[in-house]
Image 1: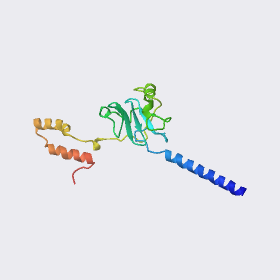
Image 2: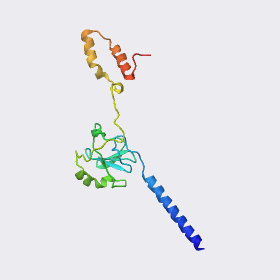
Image 3: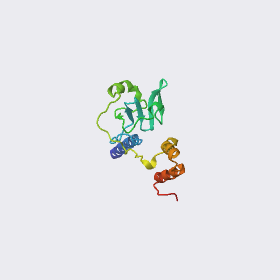
Image 4: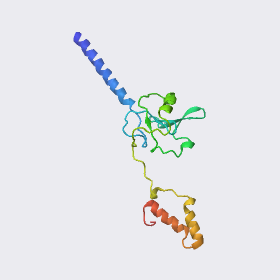
Amino acid sequence: MKTIKIAIAGLFLLIANATQAQVSINVNIGNPPAWGPAGYTEMEYYYLPDIEAYYDVRASQFIYFGGGRWVRTTYLPRQYRNYDLYGGYKVVLTDYHGRTPYTYFDRHRVKYYRGYHGPAQRPYKPRPVYGYNERRYDRRDYKHYDKHDKHHGKHDRHDHDDHDDDHRHGGHGRR
């Protein structure tokens, strides 16, 4: 009888350990964005001091103060649309776990002021490289050619379009 009680207690402890291990595996959720700092495996939030906003890694959302309240969105607000997420410093909030990191905004704002840079960071994934082939064109790109065409009459504007298409697609002519 004593052996059965010990076996049941051992089985109970074994199940409890397995359950704990399962919980710790499930807590590590979400992949960091490409621009997030490399080297952090268990993080939930970044604080972006230059724009006084947070990024929720689990939900892939920015959290910023706007319209008198904290807002969660997939994209940064209009005033920060040109903010360089790769170049800006990200403070990894390793000591906070919850849904409202802005509860400590007053502390974060003072400790990690605008322009703050701590230890050097490299991004989780390299910055995408946009070269000539990926460039998007609009009417302003042809200002030089249109002006040149009017004065010299040498080139047909459509020749430029074909030439630009060839460069964009890496070819040497249309097929």
